[in-house]
Image 1 (tube, rainbow, N blue to C red):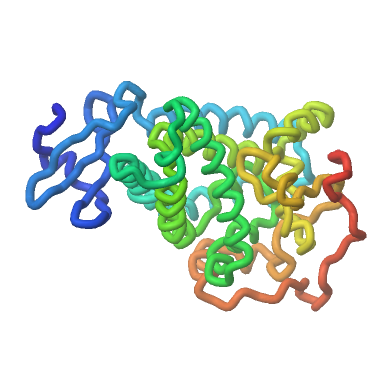
Image 2 (cartoon, rainbow, N blue to C red):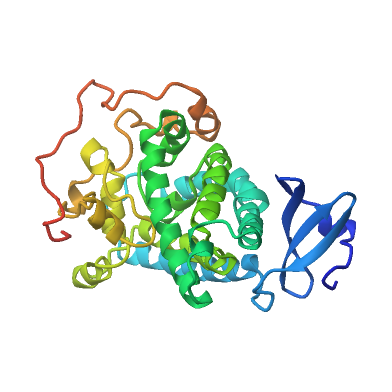
Length: 338
């Protein structure tokens, strides 16, 4: 297929999104290039994105995530960070099966729709980075950083906005945390994240190149910081100066509310430091993973997880009514503990 050539049904099939009077969507063509399909009236035409020589996003993601997943499975088995309290195999199978609807939605909408909108916003001159006269490479770097900063605030919103928390708290009900927790997201959360991504792309003017790279790094970062891998403490302290690490994110999954309400970053740790939400001085063997109101696997079966967002969230307390607490510590001035 060439630019301007009508798209056969095989390629034009798939998700489209209305933007003004146009319908746009991402098409993955046979020459391993990305194209934005613009549908005007009854004809659809290909317009190449500015990275048509870059291999398919799905191909890159699959290779990187697959390789990283195998490595992390090995590392967290050989050097576990926290004691495993429940069956790893049972939890992993449940989390993977639970993630299938979300993966489908991500493939159809969460990734292609913001990409298509990014191209449209660039053509229309919309968004911060489209207003600032900077070189393309600098716009891509700034776009990557701004997207991660935007995700910091999205993560905060998923905890603070009641409707979003209904979906996101499914992720936090996991009673152990390891690599499989990184995919334990309700399909409803994936769906409601699409408007956020589109808004961030338009307001910030995120370039398509930056968005593609960010999606790949985002997936790798989620696998890494959810893993139960005990890195050498000195190495993790160095990495945590820049990146979100397993010890840092483990604190975010604590049943202590003050600890859950910290460490919101996805890729970079400096957003938490900048906004005063970094907490890292808590030993991992003192952390209980999960939410206090859900302490039994019998309450967290696949059917019950699917309907959990449509029930009123329980209060932040243990089944016996106690509220989990810990002495105030682990602020930004504390050094990361084992």
